[in-house]
Length: 488
Image (cartoon, rainbow, N blue to C red; front, side):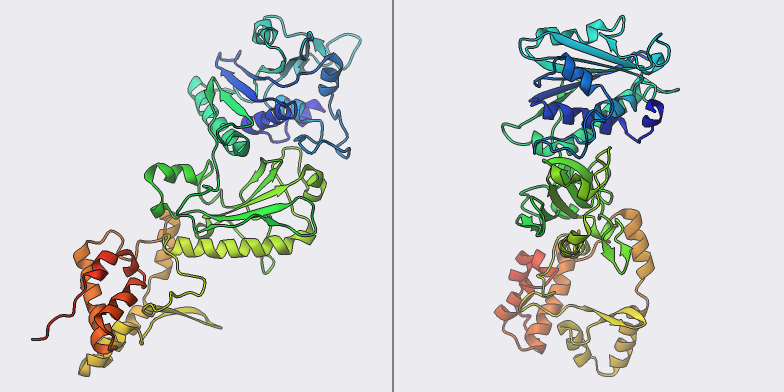
C-alpha cells in the first residue's frame, strides 16, 4: 500500500506545501526548508517553530489515515485526510524522520523507512525511534529550540534519479520557490506577515497573481458573496496589458506557468491557494472554456471554507476542485463578465472603451463587424467621417475607391493575424504604436479637415471629438496642436 501511495502525483513543490500546511496548523510563524546536495546521500529538511507534538501525538500523526476526513475541524485547519505528511514525504523519499518538541518537553522522534518494511522480525509495521544512524545531527537543531518540529527526507529516490546533478537541484529549488511564493502569498504578504518561509536561508517573497491595487488594472471588483453558501466569496480581476506594465513587472505578472496557464479561477481555502488557474469546467454550449490568449488577463479569486471540502471535491493533493452544481450559474456569470473585459483589454492593448462599445462624442469607428448565418465579416464604415469626406470629394474616382475598400475588406488576413497572435503571444501592434509623431499627424490632419470642412464642426469641437477617439486619445499633445489649414 505504501509503495502504491507513492504514485499519487505529488511534485516536490506540492509535497513541501503539504508539510507547510501542517506547520501552519501547529501555529508556526517561520518554516525553514533546506535542500542539501550530496549525490545519493542528498536530503531535504523542513524545520518549523510551531507548537510541536508529544510522543503519543507524534505516533498518531505518523499513522496513515490518522483522522476521519468527515470529522469536524477547526476553521483554520488546512488538513483533511490525515495522509499529507506521509504520502507527501513518501512521494519523494524512502526514509521519513519526524522529530518534535513541545514547550518544556522532551524531543520525540519517529522514523519510517520503506526499505525496512517486512524485514524487522516480529512486526510488519516497523516505526523506529530516533533518526537513522549517522543522521542524528540533522535533527539536532531541535535541541536548541523551545518548541517546534523537524521533518527530514532521506533516500530521495524520486528526486535524485540517474543523471540528476547539482545544477538540477538548483533548478528544482527555483521551482519550489515559485510554487510556494504563489501558494502561500496571502500569508506571506504585508509589513507583519503571518508566516515567514525560508529556502536555504533566503526568504521566499510572495507572488500576488492579481497585482492587487495596480493603477493600470482594468478591473478589480468588490468582494462578492456567493449566495446559497456559507463563507464562499469571489473577487474578479483583469490584469493590465503588457504595454501598461514596467519591464520589471512583465515577467513576474505572467506567473510560474505563464500567462495562458495562469488565467482563470484561483481557489483558496483559509487563504491557502489550492488551485491556480483554469475555468472549473465552466463554458458555453456544453463546451468548457479553454485557456487561451484572448482571456489570459482574467483571474478570479475564490475563497471557500474548509467545511466545503466535500462539496468542492478537494482531492488529497489539494490540486483539484469542482464547484457544486447549485453555484455554477453564479460563477459562470462572474467569469463571463471578467472574460469579456479581459478580451477587450487584450484586443486593444490596454486601451479599452466603455461597456457601451463607443466613447461619447467620439468619431465613429472605422471598422464594423457584421454577423450573419454565414459568419462574421468586417467592413470599413462608409459613413466614417474621413471615409465619407473622401467619397464626397472623389468625383469620377468614387467607384474605384469603393472597389478598393471592398478589396481591403475581402482580403483582411484573418488567419495570418490569428497565427501571428498565437505565435507571438500578443495582439499585432495597431493604433500607431511606436509610430513617429509626423506619421500620426498626417492622419490627424486629414481627420481634422474632414470634421471641420465636411462635417461643419468648429476647430475646438473637432479637437474635442478627436481627443475622445481611439487611437488619437493617446496623442493628446498632437490633437491640441491641430489647426485649420489656410486655403490658397
